[in-house]
Image (cartoon, helix red, strand yellow):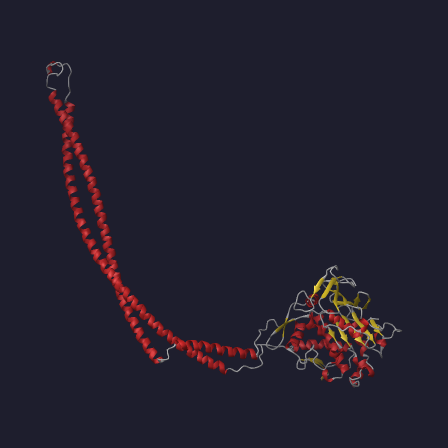
Length: 622
């Protein structure tokens, strides 16, 4: 069938063998009926479907000798047409795209799916993803231990065998005898999408007792270690007295240390002042020495200038004197000499030289006085430097002595402080030991309940959730023309259906089967109408037990009046008509006998197993 679908549809269930003719049963959307004689292979089909989805190994009857693989064709919303194959001997499941009798490594889209949901990839994850489910965690118990939501957990709502169909135990059960937290969490998750992931797990009573005992043991070990550190020779009162003495000694030495530190600070400040003074004086001496050197250089310049000016003054004098003498060359008298010598400028220059010489001699005298004063100042400062240097040496010695005394005081203070800490540590150890002993006593008195429950845990369906599901169950029963059924509700106390005030388990096997089937179909309808995921297929084995003749209900007791009413209400016809009307979004495979009412299956897709070689199909293998 082409086109996309909203659910998983089982197209065919088959068995293949290397030398055997493939045997199969086809299915379509809506209702599919496999009916006929007993032991012809009807329930074998249900087991084969369960097996291909990771169920337990199927015992192949003698008719199946030569067959080695189960092959199921599926149409899925996302992957489209696929084929699943699994060996009759167990093991993994193999998938190929498209519908084929042969699934091997050469098949399109070939993949290996693990049968268990704890490995990946696996058939559980594939089916759940195709159905639109998210990963979820179910609560295993009231302590909120968790298990993974898987196809094998969900399968109870998809494939129902005859035993579970008529079982008096809760309709939520799979294999257990009583309803567990997982059963409750599963139905709540299917209806609401809320799983147990957010519930914080608590430890069991045994775990809490073990934790309590371990805590007592750990505290005892810690207490024993502390006892070894505590001197038993002195009491707490004696230790407190020793601590007070040690604290007083520490405080006394601290005051001494502070006083000596203050003395060090004063002497250190004095050393700094004297060092600064010494540096200032030495700087002044250096400046005076530099100035004296420069003044002495200036005095040498004055002397040189005086020598030069004295030469000029003497030369002018001689020139004037020689001007009145006979010519040294010709001997002519001054009045007979024909060259005239003007001595006016020479006289002026001589006079200027004398004036400059006088000025320089005055400045030289002043300079000599200044140099003498500078040398005298330097001598005084050199004397002061020696004095300050000596004073600083004395102060430094005093500082060194004070620092030695302070160091000694500090060592003594440190020792006294350590004695205080030793006493304080022992006091702390005694207090800690007392707290350990108190805690050991309190923990030992704790009583741990054997049954623990996670905080705020509410596993049951709420009244509104149960009521909404009950409405759909009632609608299904009305569509099947179930007698009565005016009051239908899901009881959270019974974890089962109550119809007209009567618990499902209190009815006969036939009614129990019908109500069980109604619950599973109603759940599918609820999920579709509420937009919740659901694979979209259901396999019901013997839901119409009330229609079987007496020889086929042997061991189950006579039909009850309610079961006879079901027969008179022609429920089977309405049952199949209603399921046939779901063909747009669901597939229901019904396995039944109908030996006494063959006409009821005629309008719908059906496969009959006769066990008569001369009449129709003998069974699944023939």
